[in-house]
Amino acid sequence: MSKITEACLGEMIKMVGINIFRPLPPPAHETNASEGGDPEEEEDYWKPAWQHLQIVYELLLRIYGKFVVHRPCIRKGINNIFYRFIYESQRHSGVGELLEILGSVINGFSVPIKEEHKLFLVRTLIPLHKLKQLSLYHQQLSYCVVQFVDKDYKLADVVVKGLLRYWPVVNCQKEVLFLGELEKVLEAMHSTEFQRCMVPLFRRIARCVNSRNFQVAERALFFWNSERIVGLISQNRQVVLPIVLEALEKNIQSHWNPEVNGLTVNVRKMFVEMDSRLVDECERRLQEKTARAGEAEEQREMAWKKLEEEAAAMKV
Image (tube, rainbow, N blue to C red; front, side):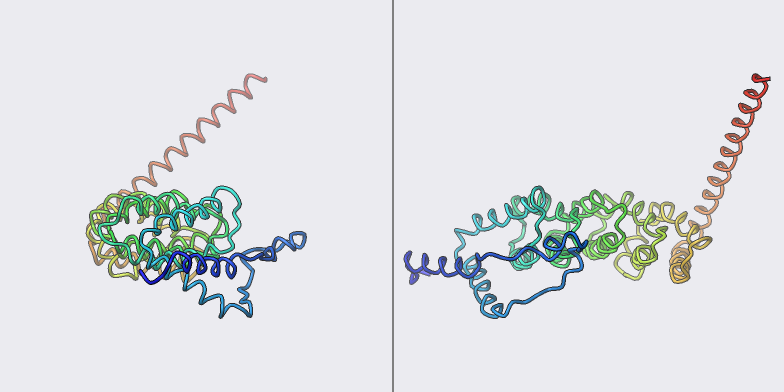
Protein backbone atom coordinates (compact mmCIF):
# COMPACT_ATOMS: atom_id res chain seq x y z
CA MET A 1 0.00 0.00 0.00
CA SER A 2 3.06 2.29 0.28
CA LYS A 3 2.99 2.76 -3.51
CA ILE A 4 -0.33 4.62 -3.35
CA THR A 5 0.38 8.28 -2.68
CA GLU A 6 -2.03 10.64 -0.94
CA ALA A 7 -2.74 12.39 -4.25
CA CYS A 8 -3.46 9.06 -5.95
CA LEU A 9 -5.77 8.04 -3.13
CA GLY A 10 -7.63 11.35 -3.42
CA GLU A 11 -8.19 10.83 -7.15
CA MET A 12 -9.37 7.27 -6.50
CA ILE A 13 -11.96 8.43 -3.97
CA LYS A 14 -13.04 11.20 -6.35
CA MET A 15 -13.56 8.64 -9.13
CA VAL A 16 -15.65 6.41 -6.85
CA GLY A 17 -17.73 9.40 -5.74
CA ILE A 18 -18.44 10.59 -9.29
CA ASN A 19 -19.64 7.13 -10.31
CA ILE A 20 -21.65 6.21 -7.22
CA PHE A 21 -23.10 9.48 -5.93
CA ARG A 22 -25.56 10.38 -8.67
CA PRO A 23 -29.21 11.51 -8.65
CA LEU A 24 -31.68 8.64 -8.66
CA PRO A 25 -35.35 8.82 -9.68
CA PRO A 26 -37.85 8.27 -6.87
CA PRO A 27 -39.25 4.74 -6.50
CA ALA A 28 -42.25 3.91 -8.66
CA HIS A 29 -44.57 3.62 -5.65
CA GLU A 30 -43.79 7.26 -4.72
CA THR A 31 -44.33 8.70 -8.18
CA ASN A 32 -47.55 6.71 -8.56
CA ALA A 33 -48.83 7.16 -5.02
CA SER A 34 -52.28 8.08 -6.28
CA GLU A 35 -52.48 4.72 -8.05
CA GLY A 36 -51.82 2.83 -4.83
CA GLY A 37 -48.33 1.56 -5.72
CA ASP A 38 -46.80 -1.00 -3.37
CA PRO A 39 -43.01 -0.92 -2.77
CA GLU A 40 -42.99 -4.71 -2.28
CA GLU A 41 -44.29 -5.18 -5.83
CA GLU A 42 -41.44 -3.25 -7.46
CA GLU A 43 -39.27 -5.28 -9.81
CA ASP A 44 -35.48 -5.02 -9.81
CA TYR A 45 -34.25 -2.81 -12.61
CA TRP A 46 -30.64 -2.99 -13.73
CA LYS A 47 -29.36 0.11 -15.47
CA PRO A 48 -27.36 -0.38 -18.70
CA ALA A 49 -24.28 1.02 -16.91
CA TRP A 50 -24.48 -1.47 -14.03
CA GLN A 51 -21.65 -3.69 -15.37
CA HIS A 52 -19.36 -0.67 -15.09
CA LEU A 53 -20.78 0.48 -11.74
CA GLN A 54 -20.41 -2.99 -10.24
CA ILE A 55 -16.64 -2.75 -10.69
CA VAL A 56 -16.65 0.60 -8.91
CA TYR A 57 -18.57 -0.89 -5.98
CA GLU A 58 -16.09 -3.78 -5.82
CA LEU A 59 -13.25 -1.25 -5.78
CA LEU A 60 -14.94 0.53 -2.87
CA LEU A 61 -15.12 -2.78 -1.00
CA ARG A 62 -11.40 -3.35 -1.67
CA ILE A 63 -10.67 0.08 -0.18
CA TYR A 64 -12.42 -1.07 3.00
CA GLY A 65 -10.42 -4.29 2.97
CA LYS A 66 -6.99 -2.73 2.41
CA PHE A 67 -7.14 0.47 4.47
CA VAL A 68 -7.61 -1.07 7.90
CA VAL A 69 -7.21 2.21 9.74
CA HIS A 70 -10.28 3.68 7.98
CA ARG A 71 -12.61 0.75 8.63
CA PRO A 72 -14.25 2.16 11.81
CA CYS A 73 -15.03 5.42 9.99
CA ILE A 74 -16.56 3.56 7.02
CA ARG A 75 -18.64 1.33 9.30
CA LYS A 76 -19.84 4.38 11.24
CA GLY A 77 -20.97 6.03 7.99
CA ILE A 78 -22.89 2.91 6.95
CA ASN A 79 -24.40 2.68 10.42
CA ASN A 80 -25.66 6.26 10.20
CA ILE A 81 -27.41 5.45 6.91
CA PHE A 82 -29.22 2.57 8.62
CA TYR A 83 -30.19 4.80 11.55
CA ARG A 84 -31.74 7.35 9.17
CA PHE A 85 -33.63 4.55 7.45
CA ILE A 86 -34.92 3.07 10.72
CA TYR A 87 -35.84 6.23 12.60
CA GLU A 88 -36.30 8.99 10.00
CA SER A 89 -36.77 8.59 6.25
CA GLN A 90 -37.64 4.88 5.75
CA ARG A 91 -36.33 5.22 2.17
CA HIS A 92 -34.96 1.78 1.43
CA SER A 93 -32.84 2.54 -1.67
CA GLY A 94 -29.44 0.88 -1.27
CA VAL A 95 -30.15 -0.82 2.07
CA GLY A 96 -30.05 -4.31 0.58
CA GLU A 97 -26.79 -3.56 -1.22
CA LEU A 98 -25.16 -2.18 1.94
CA LEU A 99 -26.26 -5.25 3.87
CA GLU A 100 -24.79 -7.46 1.16
CA ILE A 101 -21.44 -5.70 1.56
CA LEU A 102 -21.69 -5.99 5.34
CA GLY A 103 -22.26 -9.73 4.98
CA SER A 104 -18.73 -9.99 3.57
CA VAL A 105 -17.40 -7.67 6.27
CA ILE A 106 -19.02 -9.65 9.11
CA ASN A 107 -17.70 -12.87 7.61
CA GLY A 108 -14.19 -11.46 8.14
CA PHE A 109 -14.70 -10.47 11.80
CA SER A 110 -12.16 -12.02 14.14
CA VAL A 111 -13.25 -14.17 17.09
CA PRO A 112 -14.07 -13.26 19.83
CA ILE A 113 -16.30 -10.58 18.32
CA LYS A 114 -15.59 -7.06 19.55
CA GLU A 115 -18.14 -5.28 21.71
CA GLU A 116 -18.71 -2.57 19.07
CA HIS A 117 -19.77 -5.24 16.56
CA LYS A 118 -22.20 -6.77 19.08
CA LEU A 119 -23.72 -3.31 19.60
CA PHE A 120 -24.14 -3.02 15.83
CA LEU A 121 -26.11 -6.27 15.86
CA VAL A 122 -28.36 -5.15 18.73
CA ARG A 123 -28.87 -1.49 17.78
CA THR A 124 -28.96 -1.71 13.99
CA LEU A 125 -29.47 -5.14 12.46
CA ILE A 126 -32.20 -6.35 14.80
CA PRO A 127 -34.27 -3.09 14.63
CA LEU A 128 -34.15 -3.32 10.81
CA HIS A 129 -36.66 -6.18 11.18
CA LYS A 130 -39.46 -3.88 12.31
CA LEU A 131 -39.85 -1.92 9.07
CA LYS A 132 -42.63 -2.62 6.59
CA GLN A 133 -40.15 -2.84 3.67
CA LEU A 134 -38.43 -5.87 5.27
CA SER A 135 -39.16 -8.20 2.35
CA LEU A 136 -37.01 -6.03 0.06
CA TYR A 137 -33.80 -6.68 1.99
CA HIS A 138 -34.57 -9.58 4.33
CA GLN A 139 -32.37 -12.12 2.55
CA GLN A 140 -29.27 -9.95 3.04
CA LEU A 141 -30.27 -8.99 6.59
CA SER A 142 -30.87 -12.60 7.59
CA TYR A 143 -27.46 -13.57 6.21
CA CYS A 144 -25.76 -10.88 8.33
CA VAL A 145 -27.58 -11.94 11.50
CA VAL A 146 -26.83 -15.64 11.03
CA GLN A 147 -23.17 -14.77 10.39
CA PHE A 148 -23.02 -13.22 13.86
CA VAL A 149 -24.49 -16.36 15.43
CA ASP A 150 -22.08 -18.58 13.50
CA LYS A 151 -19.19 -16.47 14.80
CA ASP A 152 -20.43 -16.44 18.40
CA TYR A 153 -23.17 -18.91 19.35
CA LYS A 154 -23.80 -16.99 22.59
CA LEU A 155 -25.43 -14.23 20.50
CA ALA A 156 -28.24 -16.60 19.46
CA ASP A 157 -30.22 -15.81 22.62
CA VAL A 158 -29.91 -12.06 21.90
CA VAL A 159 -31.08 -12.53 18.31
CA VAL A 160 -34.07 -14.72 19.23
CA LYS A 161 -35.28 -12.28 21.89
CA GLY A 162 -34.81 -9.41 19.43
CA LEU A 163 -36.91 -11.17 16.79
CA LEU A 164 -39.61 -11.89 19.36
CA ARG A 165 -39.61 -8.23 20.36
CA TYR A 166 -40.29 -7.06 16.78
CA TRP A 167 -42.53 -9.98 15.80
CA PRO A 168 -45.22 -8.88 13.28
CA VAL A 169 -48.75 -9.14 14.61
CA VAL A 170 -50.93 -8.72 11.51
CA ASN A 171 -48.50 -9.15 8.59
CA CYS A 172 -48.48 -12.85 7.69
CA GLN A 173 -45.82 -12.49 4.98
CA LYS A 174 -43.41 -10.95 7.49
CA GLU A 175 -44.21 -13.75 9.94
CA VAL A 176 -43.11 -16.31 7.36
CA LEU A 177 -39.83 -14.40 6.88
CA PHE A 178 -39.28 -14.22 10.65
CA LEU A 179 -39.90 -17.96 11.01
CA GLY A 180 -37.42 -18.77 8.25
CA GLU A 181 -34.72 -16.65 9.89
CA LEU A 182 -35.54 -18.04 13.32
CA GLU A 183 -35.04 -21.58 12.04
CA LYS A 184 -31.54 -20.72 10.76
CA VAL A 185 -30.63 -19.17 14.13
CA LEU A 186 -31.93 -22.19 16.07
CA GLU A 187 -29.88 -24.55 13.90
CA ALA A 188 -26.74 -22.67 15.00
CA MET A 189 -27.81 -22.47 18.66
CA HIS A 190 -26.30 -24.43 21.55
CA SER A 191 -28.33 -26.01 24.32
CA THR A 192 -27.47 -23.41 26.99
CA GLU A 193 -28.67 -20.49 24.87
CA PHE A 194 -31.74 -22.47 23.81
CA GLN A 195 -32.76 -22.95 27.44
CA ARG A 196 -32.56 -19.21 28.09
CA CYS A 197 -35.18 -18.32 25.49
CA MET A 198 -37.20 -21.51 24.89
CA VAL A 199 -40.28 -20.50 26.93
CA PRO A 200 -41.13 -17.22 25.11
CA LEU A 201 -39.87 -18.73 21.86
CA PHE A 202 -42.23 -21.72 21.87
CA ARG A 203 -45.14 -19.64 23.11
CA ARG A 204 -44.72 -17.64 19.91
CA ILE A 205 -44.24 -20.78 17.79
CA ALA A 206 -47.40 -22.28 19.33
CA ARG A 207 -49.37 -19.18 18.30
CA CYS A 208 -47.94 -19.49 14.79
CA VAL A 209 -48.91 -23.18 14.66
CA ASN A 210 -52.50 -22.11 15.44
CA SER A 211 -52.48 -19.32 12.84
CA ARG A 212 -55.47 -19.34 10.51
CA ASN A 213 -53.06 -18.37 7.73
CA PHE A 214 -51.90 -21.75 6.45
CA GLN A 215 -48.50 -20.44 5.28
CA VAL A 216 -47.60 -19.25 8.78
CA ALA A 217 -48.84 -22.46 10.43
CA GLU A 218 -47.08 -24.63 7.85
CA ARG A 219 -43.79 -22.73 8.21
CA ALA A 220 -43.89 -23.08 12.00
CA LEU A 221 -44.53 -26.83 11.77
CA PHE A 222 -41.56 -27.20 9.39
CA PHE A 223 -39.29 -26.56 12.40
CA TRP A 224 -39.75 -30.23 13.28
CA ASN A 225 -38.13 -31.20 9.95
CA SER A 226 -34.76 -30.00 11.29
CA GLU A 227 -32.80 -32.69 13.12
CA ARG A 228 -30.87 -30.05 15.05
CA ILE A 229 -34.02 -28.30 16.31
CA VAL A 230 -35.72 -31.62 17.12
CA GLY A 231 -32.64 -32.56 19.14
CA LEU A 232 -32.86 -29.35 21.18
CA ILE A 233 -36.60 -29.90 21.70
CA SER A 234 -36.02 -33.51 22.77
CA GLN A 235 -33.45 -32.46 25.38
CA ASN A 236 -35.92 -29.93 26.81
CA ARG A 237 -39.22 -31.70 26.11
CA GLN A 238 -40.35 -31.38 29.75
CA VAL A 239 -40.65 -27.61 29.14
CA VAL A 240 -41.45 -27.44 25.41
CA LEU A 241 -44.20 -30.07 25.12
CA PRO A 242 -46.60 -28.54 27.70
CA ILE A 243 -46.35 -25.24 25.80
CA VAL A 244 -47.06 -26.57 22.29
CA LEU A 245 -49.33 -29.56 22.95
CA GLU A 246 -52.50 -27.47 23.33
CA ALA A 247 -51.79 -25.78 19.98
CA LEU A 248 -51.24 -29.17 18.33
CA GLU A 249 -54.47 -30.62 19.72
CA LYS A 250 -56.41 -27.55 18.64
CA ASN A 251 -55.05 -27.86 15.09
CA ILE A 252 -55.91 -31.55 14.87
CA GLN A 253 -59.47 -30.86 15.96
CA SER A 254 -60.32 -27.72 14.03
CA HIS A 255 -57.72 -26.35 11.57
CA TRP A 256 -59.31 -25.76 8.17
CA ASN A 257 -56.24 -26.62 6.06
CA PRO A 258 -55.64 -30.37 5.44
CA GLU A 259 -51.88 -29.95 4.88
CA VAL A 260 -51.48 -28.14 8.20
CA ASN A 261 -53.64 -30.78 9.86
CA GLY A 262 -51.43 -33.55 8.47
CA LEU A 263 -48.21 -31.85 9.54
CA THR A 264 -49.64 -31.35 13.03
CA VAL A 265 -50.45 -35.06 13.33
CA ASN A 266 -46.86 -35.91 12.31
CA VAL A 267 -45.42 -33.55 14.94
CA ARG A 268 -47.63 -35.07 17.63
CA LYS A 269 -46.48 -38.57 16.61
CA MET A 270 -42.90 -37.35 16.93
CA PHE A 271 -43.55 -36.27 20.52
CA VAL A 272 -45.20 -39.63 21.29
CA GLU A 273 -42.07 -41.41 20.00
CA MET A 274 -39.89 -39.12 22.14
CA ASP A 275 -41.78 -39.64 25.40
CA SER A 276 -45.25 -41.22 25.35
CA ARG A 277 -45.63 -40.95 29.13
CA LEU A 278 -45.00 -37.22 29.04
CA VAL A 279 -47.55 -36.81 26.23
CA ASP A 280 -50.14 -38.72 28.28
CA GLU A 281 -49.40 -36.59 31.34
CA CYS A 282 -49.64 -33.34 29.37
CA GLU A 283 -52.93 -34.46 27.80
CA ARG A 284 -54.31 -35.26 31.25
CA ARG A 285 -53.34 -31.79 32.47
CA LEU A 286 -54.85 -30.25 29.35
CA GLN A 287 -58.13 -32.10 29.93
CA GLU A 288 -58.18 -30.89 33.54
CA LYS A 289 -57.50 -27.34 32.38
CA THR A 290 -60.30 -27.56 29.82
CA ALA A 291 -62.68 -28.94 32.45
CA ARG A 292 -61.82 -26.14 34.88
CA ALA A 293 -62.34 -23.56 32.14
CA GLY A 294 -65.73 -25.10 31.35
CA GLU A 295 -66.76 -25.02 35.01
CA ALA A 296 -65.66 -21.40 35.34
CA GLU A 297 -67.64 -20.47 32.22
CA GLU A 298 -70.71 -22.26 33.58
CA GLN A 299 -70.43 -20.46 36.93
CA ARG A 300 -70.04 -17.15 35.14
CA GLU A 301 -73.17 -17.78 33.08
CA MET A 302 -75.10 -18.75 36.22
CA ALA A 303 -73.95 -15.59 37.99
CA TRP A 304 -75.07 -13.42 35.08
CA LYS A 305 -78.39 -15.24 34.92
CA LYS A 306 -78.92 -14.67 38.64
CA LEU A 307 -78.14 -10.95 38.26
CA GLU A 308 -80.58 -10.66 35.36
CA GLU A 309 -83.31 -12.37 37.40
CA GLU A 310 -82.69 -10.05 40.37
CA ALA A 311 -82.75 -7.00 38.10
CA ALA A 312 -86.03 -8.16 36.54
CA ALA A 313 -87.54 -8.71 40.01
CA MET A 314 -86.54 -5.20 41.14
CA LYS A 315 -88.29 -3.67 38.10
CA VAL A 316 -91.51 -5.44 39.04
